[in-house]
Length: 475
Image 1 (tube, rainbow, N blue to C red):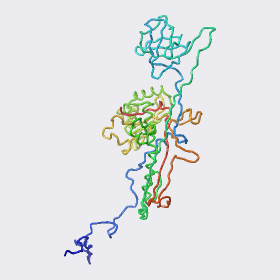
Image 2: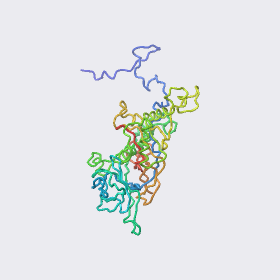
Image 3: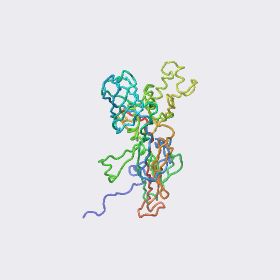
Image 4: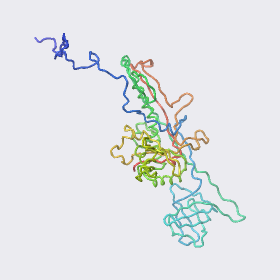
C-alpha cells in the first residue's frame, strides 16, 4: 500500500549549529521573509527626468468655458477683391472685352459697373487697366481698356484681376449695388477624455512607502497612490496632446461606427494647420532664403509682428547653425567664432552655442517643444530616418490675440489664436473632473472591493486665424 504522505513539499532547510556554509543551510531565495534582507533605497531614482510633455497650450493659449456641443466663430474675409482665373473672349488689341471668372468657389463676382480694374496675364506678366462697363451674368463682367492699343494679350488667356478704384462721369448716379462683408464660418466640437486608476482593498492594507520627487514639483512619500499620481500626470498630458492630434471621424470610418454613428473626433491644431494654414514641406528651413520664403507668405496672410516657433531638436540646431553662419562662425577666425551666441566671451567662459530668436521682417522666438522630442510621443516616430514623410519638426504660432465674432455669445470677442473651450455650466464643470468610487480608501459608494479614482474632461481647441500658422514637416 502506497504511503499517503506525499514526497513534496519536503522538509525545510536544516540550520547548522555553527556558521558553516553547508548544502543543507544554503538559502537561494532572497526575499523579505528571511534574515538576508537587501539594502534598499527608499527614494525613487528619476532616470528619465521630467517625463511630462504638457507645456505648449499653457504657453500660448487660454481656457474658457462653453455650454454648447459645438463652438462656432466667424473669421474676416479679405477686404479687397481679387480673382486669379479670368479669361477674356476678345482678341489681342481689342478695345473692349468680356471676362469670365472661373475661380474655385466663386458663384458671383463682386465687381460693379464703374469700378476700375488691373488685369494681368498670369504667364507673360503684361497688363491692362480698364473700367467696368457691364456685368452681364453672375460670373462675367465687361471692360473698356484705358490703353489705345487695347487688350495686351491673346483671347482665352488666364489672367488675374483686382479692383483698385472707380471712375464716373459728371452728373451721373452713384454706384449700383453694394457689397456685404465676407466671413468664413468655422466650428469645432469638444471630445470627452477619460482615465481611471484602481487599487484593491487588500493591497491598500499593505503599506509600503516610496520617497519621490514629482514632475509638478511636489516632494515627499507616497504609498499606493504613487500610481494614482502618475495616472493624473498622464491624464494631464493627454488633455494637451489630444488637442494637438485630434482629427474628425470621417463618414464611413470605423471610429464613427465605434462612437455610435454620431459626429466623432475633433479638429486638433495639426489637423487645422494642415488644412487651412501654411505648410513647409521641406522638413527644416536651413537658410535665410528659406525663411525669406516663409516671411513672404506671412506678408500675404495676417502679417503678425511676433511669432513663436516651437521646434524639435533638429530644427532648433538648424536655426542655430543658420544664425551662426551669419555671425561669422564659419569664417575660421577664433575671434569671429567667439561671438557666436554669447558676445565678449573669454577662454574661461562657457560658450553659448544657441539662439533664442531672431528678426527677419517679423520677430521669431524659438522654443524647444518637448512633445516633438520625447521618444514615447512624436520624438520616437521615424527615429532612424528622421526625414520620413509626415515627420513634424516644428510649428510657428502667432503671438497675441485676434478679434472674432463668437456666434454663441452673439458679439465680437478678443481671443488668443489658440485657446481651449471646455464644457461648463452653473451645475456642471467639465474642465477637469475627478471623483472616487468603490468601498476602500474611504470611498463607500459601491460594493466594489477597491478604490477607483476617475478622471474626465470635455474640451476642444479653437485655432483662430490658421492662415497665420506655419507647420514644418517632411513631405
